[in-house]
Image (cartoon, rainbow, N blue to C red; front, side, top):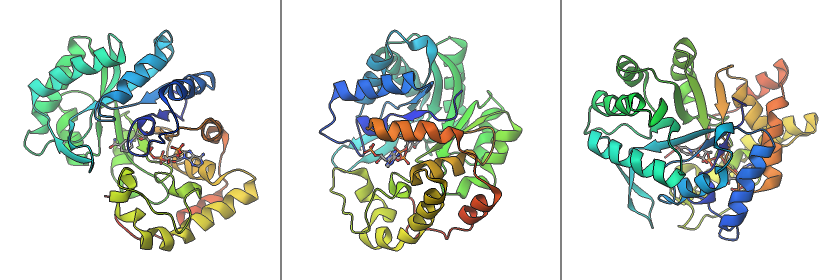
Length: 306
Ligand SMILES: NC(=O)c1ccc[n+]([C@@H]2O[C@H](COP(=O)([O-])OP(=O)(O)OC[C@H]3O[C@@H](n4cnc5c(N)ncnc54)[C@H](OP(=O)(O)O)[C@@H]3O)[C@@H](O)[C@H]2O)c1
């Protein structure tokens, strides 16, 4: 797979720009295909449901050229406040898979993730139900989002874990110690979500930025006004490395994540063609040892992830 995929969430959810309509979203996804992107990430919960339908429409007719990844297990409880619940019960997973196939307009999902492990359902039960979907041909391979190594061991004892999708970026390094190496040892891809720090690491979010309640970031500690201001020192460093290379901060942020291993992929999200082009071009940037040392030494951010 090309190391830079496209995270499609923002086209329908979380940070959606209402001035970008569905036609423009479809064009963006198709432009990504033309640029060589072959991995598109969505989830039933994005929209909810609208994002899978958008991705399905955009990829219709070119389905054979791509990996379509979607997810099950998070349930929106309140749209206005982005409140989610979890559901990993086997019957729910089966019904959700059928619904995702319909919305995507495909016969098979290439990569089906458990979006979050449901604390009320042992991971073995959910994962067995997902493995059955593989046996039935509805799904080609399975992944999990945000698991611990202990959970990966439990799941992989039942069916191989083809991919782990968890947050990894210059300001979120939690998974480097255990999960990223586990993936390398087990032949699984590590798919880094929010590799641009939900936009922050690109430098496009000013120190005085304020997010309205319709923007998911308003809920996140790192996007509170004090944290946005305090973390500018991180962005300044990324920008200075970028300026010396004559590339953008976003490209440096993506190149750093990709430098964490051959099996590490990124799925930056964007609604804009010029960002998409930059992000795709980041695949060709190899950071030097001194650039890596500078970026590795960045301070930890102010504010938790969620
Ligand atoms: N498994 C999970 O739990 C989970 C959680 C979060 C996300 N995801 C997946 O991961 C994907 C990516 O994560 P994300 O969208 O949260 O965060 P991200 O990729 O780190 O950042 C997206 C933000 O960065 C901006 N951006 C993108 N490219 C840029 C560039 N070159 N220059 C300046 N700004 C740029 C986007 O702006 P515009 O939107 O204005 O273009 C958007 O605001 C999602 O689409 C989704 O598929 C999964």
